[in-house]
View 1 (cartoon, rainbow, N blue to C red):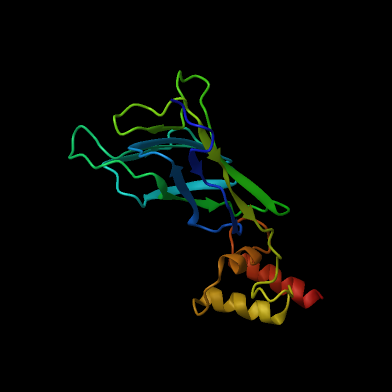
View 2 (cartoon, one colour):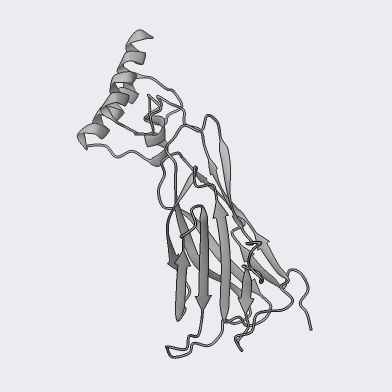
Length: 221
């Protein structure tokens, strides 16, 4: 007997807001299933010029949990609750489980505007089977593969360059003081403040050259 569409869902389905240069941006891999599941294969793709893969933290216990980033811009995750070389775990019960968190870093390059960058599921046309699939407790794959795949995304806010203290007013004496304090180590910048500090748009945030550019702009106004 087959499953109706929607009985099984792999989701990255909400939008995360981040800033250029921000690290450890989380995208959660969530499974919802109407039947017990013993394994998951997920194949994801993303724009490698905007998002850089940092790592995966598995939040649900698996006896076999691996990921592969051999192909640039793609991430393959393979999870099994049981493995021939170890003591078996029982399958995950029907319901919703957060399997893990995928962490990415946003490029620090100037993207010129707000940008929404997707992480979506990918199917390799060269493989004879589905790349995104669920495994039954008997090690067979769920058939037919009526698996709903919900993509995720990172919404990247364009910086307000010069607004180092993030008060909405760029290129002020207060911004200079904030950047000086950051350079001397007495002030930590938030990801938004750090993005705003890249005055010369070279992707190196909060540098001495940014400070000199900010001084130049403020003194000429």
